[in-house]
Image (cartoon, rainbow, N blue to C red; front, top):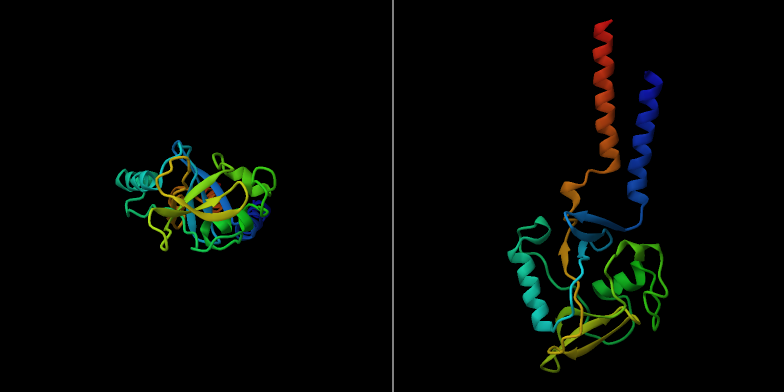
Length: 203
């Protein structure tokens, strides 16, 4: 019994180390909806499928997520991801960070063609353009987008309706509902310990 307990403690410790060394993206489901948490930026990406829409319709959609407490959150924290107001191919902003740093994207190449293993964590990410939460200040009627088809960001008329959207929320919205492997192991250790004490008293 003592050897078993020592083994399980070592196993639990190993899992806790693995938890800090794992990739910075974690995919998970809450009910039927899929999300991806980025521990680098401390945000959760919504990965549910939906149709393309205009920038204004996208903001209406964001409001509907907040009013319906999407993902179980009640703080009205869903928003469009950030993109700096500078055209080009860099990893600045949340979508740029996702494309280049987390998914291993390459400038002028579709994320569907060049990526790392993190790409498989997203089930609905399209190699296409996505709205950001920023309007193009110098020109009225324009908003910034990020293109997962080539890693670029530019401004586009906010009335066009062929652009996708990704919603983000600060923090890990799935943390409260998903116990870590180490936590589960420690719970198991406690149960085994109780069983051992019970057996000892029976003797």
